[in-house]
Image 1 (tube, rainbow, N blue to C red):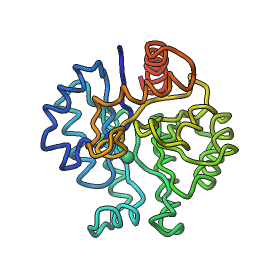
Image 2: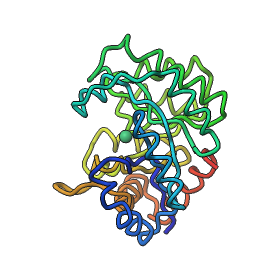
Image 3: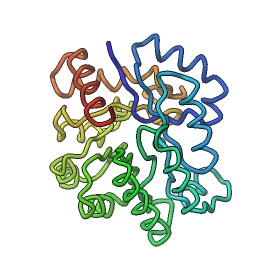
Image 4: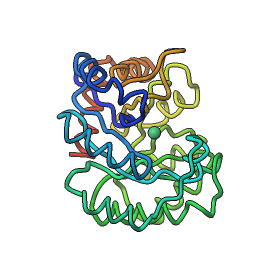
Length: 253
Ligand SMILES: [Zn+2]
């Protein structure tokens, strides 16, 4: 089976320390491409390094909502946005997408992040690269901003918005990357039901969103998302995998 993980964090310490083995295991299960997403200054640089080292790893570089990252990591985080945007542009030939960026009102103040997201969206348009979008408790604003921009090369990562918003984003032509925790997350299963197979992608968000309780996530587990999508949509696993591979190529390649 041909598999793809469009969203993993390979630079996170718990993954990076075993990254050789983790990539080996992914290859053995049929994973042909992993998009390593980054979240900030150091993460962007490490992600580029990893993409340079492993043939199946593609880099997405971007700036995660800074307040949210500070809360999640417990480390001070105050990026120089214009410097980072310059860095992204300078490395445009080494990246497959811009991400992960977006809005997070659960962990951050609204006014501190909208401009940063909009700037990355403008850059994605300028460079003609897909944008990988995080939205938490900010789904409506995210979709409004994306709609206003008119940009279509959009991946909604782990989207848990209301049915109406899922439909709106799907009608706008956006893609939805379905994380491996779809095996138990009802709201993600609802997204799978709502969205046409031609707009679905698969992701692990490793080391997060594991399909297995008490086990760190990794790209080799992407098959669990494929299985669940097949079950929900009434397709074979092979059909789902092939469709998602085609979607990946249409959007990213
Ligand atoms: Zn992520």
